[in-house]
Length: 339
Image (cartoon, rainbow, N blue to C red; front, side):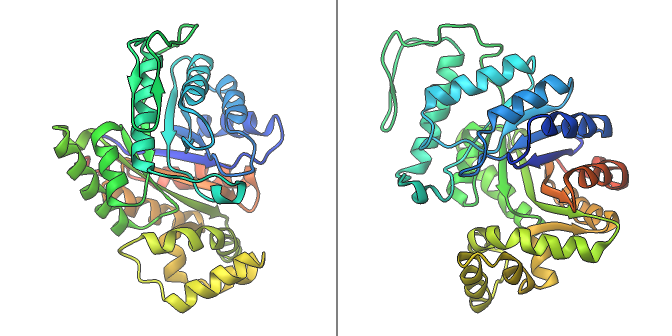
């Protein structure tokens, strides 16, 4: 039976040196995967990932996620190849359509086609295929290829998506589906069904495709303080993802009020509107025991990987330390269903 993996998702808002320190502690504690978000207007994720690659020896590393609208597929291939070289074969590729790109004047037409063709172009380039590719969105002229040797022809692929069509695409072509911004076991069950539908279309075994759930995480021995901070942190993401979860019944007036306050920059006030039961669907928060119980529920629901997202704790270091020393030992990873 496969054991569930546990990962950390980091925001790229730190100083040089911080990433290496946090990555070393995470690896020492037994985390399996370190991801860096590709959110708009933060540091490009390749910088922290390369720093973490030099500071670690075992953990897998990747961006969750890059998008084909602000970075061309050949650039994505180059970033993936650089990380895989630097980490000696520990990189994964995360792709998603992206969020908030309208703020910088970037449209996102035909997202599923763009994602599928991006993966095709990336792996043709890494695999040395110079026969050319003529897609509906992207193309490679015959004879176009990398002018250096990558470490591997196909690092694992993760697709980030919330809907049935994106999840089915992951089932057809990816190694993992990530549902970002969710700590909801019911959503895990739904996502596994969507992935299985796509896998069946491609003649794949659904058990080959892992489902990853990750969300804002705040853990502290002061559970009340942790949950208060989590409310503030999750408010911005709740405005994006609450409508996407078909299992969550979020009152329309509550969501409208949260969105209005977030748009006004009043995140703390927006967070105070979020009740406990709703917070637990979209964030891991509280004492180590509370966070471990939430993660265990996802593992029991068949999630291949649980990803604890930023900010982790009341401070970066205290959060990583508590997650590693007090949360991970409480988890039964062998409870993973794997199907």
